[in-house]
Length: 415
Image 1: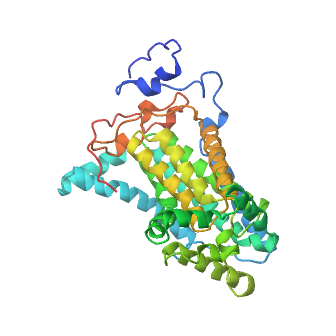
Image 2: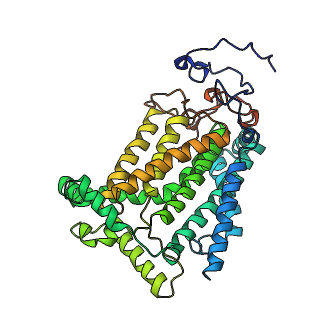
């Protein structure tokens, strides 16, 4: 172990070590969260806030369901069986998804080489800290998400009033007497654009779980994984609170003629399905409904992805993809009549708050960004997700990926 180098003199923000340190610079133990303040105590246990938030959401869900005599519904139905089966399966699947393609690639399909590559990956990547991140992160995210879906479902039983008319009038005031959905449909068209925006809107649904897995499993810096999943939990929690603060159905459901002229598409079909499930929940034997407008969690989560990519992903191409996705998502929420303008603004606020709370809870400085790369050449997972050598000084010692240098590792297959 080389002896630590003397602490350098303070440098301007543009010359911060996170952006200029050489690839072989040894990781040093942090002493502060920012240049002028101590690191929070949560830094030693970056999972503390995440676990506490999941526990709070879970308790509130069970109490509300019990009080209303409603079962706690599983948002994914019977997929992979009950949760006590699903959680271990998801964690194991994440490990296999990382190990198997990489081992086959490195071992060139040779049995002995594949086994050696798998063992090396287990030794260097799947450290105790990584296993803790994946198991706790996936489990807590699942609890928060299930709680969010159930509390959203119970909303019409707890708060019957609606504020759609107030937000609708605000929209028409902002758009000079017109509805945002109608303006966008007249401007962009109702055929091809509807299919494009529908694809963007619906892709969000599987990306919610996929991107949690990506950041937990493949983030070179374990601290970034804690930051991402903690911020996600905060966003879903704040979104739940916003539903109860200002209950709405959304313009497309409250005023269905706003989207009636669109070509048939998957997003419109989803809206019809949600309306039917809501009717079954309120007046039939349905166990779940998923309608709530304020705030827009599509906007919140899409912006949070973009912010996290900007601060933890080194590829500018990847960053731009997330920002384009965010912009298209906002347009889609208005175009299809899912949300009012106020919903999107509130969603953006939720994302910003969740981003900063997640940073604070896991010991990161949101003012610091990773050193970017162009991303034009072949970029593997080690170059895409920032590693320990570009992490802000606030990173705890245990948050490194075993403290090893993987700069010479072969690229992983694309996923």
